[in-house]
Amino acid sequence: MLKEVLKLTHVERGANIIVNIPRDESLFDDAAQPATDIYCASPIVTYLDLWLGNDRDRETAEHLASKYFPWL
Image: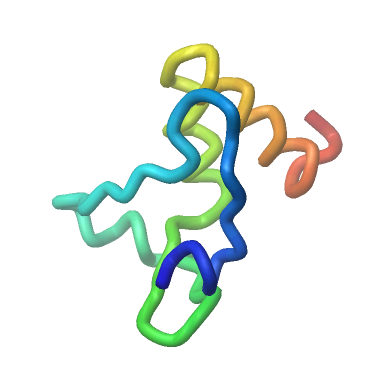
């Protein structure tokens, strides 16, 4: 369902998507809702989480920044 709704694509290496269930509900105070009953953290929260990860995560953070934060 996530693949179809979020239009996910296959990558040659690394994870394409990771689903985390947070304990802190405030992460979703400014959540996006791309589809019915599917909530995602805001782009800035997602960017910061990815930036702290490995090289692949940081590459994804940079892609996200180019889309949502072109001034970075």
